[in-house]
Amino acid sequence: MINDENTGVEDVEVIEVEDTEDEETGVEEQEEEKGVDYWKAEALKNKAILDRNKNKPATPSKSNDFGYDVKAYLKASGIKTDEFDFVKTEMKSAGIKDVDALLENKYFQSKLEEHREISRTQEATPKGNRSGGVATDSVEYWMAKPIEEVPTDKRRAVVNAKLEKEKGQGKFYNS
Image (tube, rainbow, N blue to C red):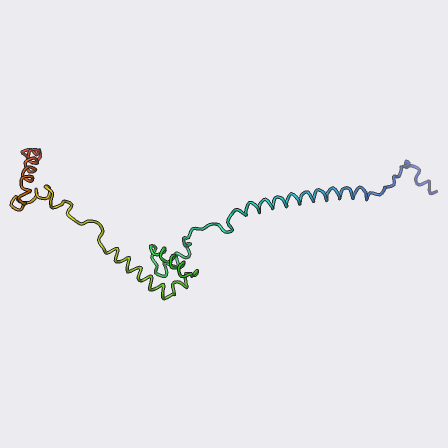
């Protein structure tokens, strides 16, 4: 009666599953090989990046200029914009990296006052030549003077220049 239950069912061939561990290990070995290849490629890529970065400086090259924060602090401390270069050179010569320590340094304060005094003196000193523009030995200078004030050796040249000037002018003021 046990067979009576299976009367309507076709006979199905049962295939026993063989050991699938061999197939699974083959897949795992392929994945491991792919993983090894992947990690080798990643290692080569990272090595190339490191080699490229060896030629670059460790920190980006900055100009020797102060940042906005230091400039603002210096201005708030009474340092003018044209004195920033002086502060920079004093920081280098004193070997001080901290701006705050430099500003509190009495030696720096005396040097700064001396620098300011020199700057004020240079600004107060007149620059250039302040002459009238015409040399006293020229004919143009003596043409504006009365003939009696003209030296005797220049009188002939002055009179000739005045005559030439009058020839070039018209008789009326607007001609």
